[in-house]
Image (cartoon, rainbow, N blue to C red):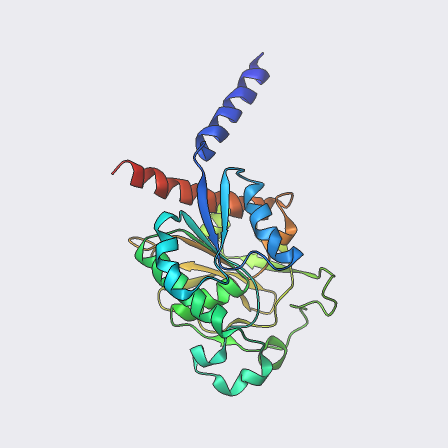
Length: 261
């Protein structure tokens, strides 16, 4: 009987956390391939009451009006951030860029910061957020940060993995509760210098930054920024599940606060 009561209590807590309201989550790009489709599926696996909105392809002048009803922003993976945005234009030959994607995501970040929208920045998203905040990237890890760790699989349909090590005084460590986690490897660029107000929260074995957060988050928009792809690992992976849950918790927290105004 006691176990039944506890089960009922847990279920009620989950319902209270997720609520019945539809959440409008904007994805910088979430269509075009099986891998892009995984972002929406990953978030909806935590909360089915999600309206996934794809920003890629919209005219830039339409973005501001689209943002009026947005509850959260997911910056997804994709091609390289153009090195001209972090003063390394000479390295453009090492990159595959999408100038529209860059312009789109810088605008999305501007609007998200202005409206205090929670952000989940994944892989390219983590990189473009860092550049937006004044940081720089390694245009190509093998060229500028050679290491034993394979950060990008040679075969597109394969999954390579490596360990990342979490900073124990970070919010990321408090959330995941592990010293190290096994993540996938799908990138050839990486964070070099962090932007203003940021501190690293996870590193590869050789010291490459794999995640970061605000040094002081007071009066700043919430974000989660990780270099790996939790959406490909899925919610069966404990760390990936916790990341999605925390992002949605912050989205609901903001929406609830706004509804009370």
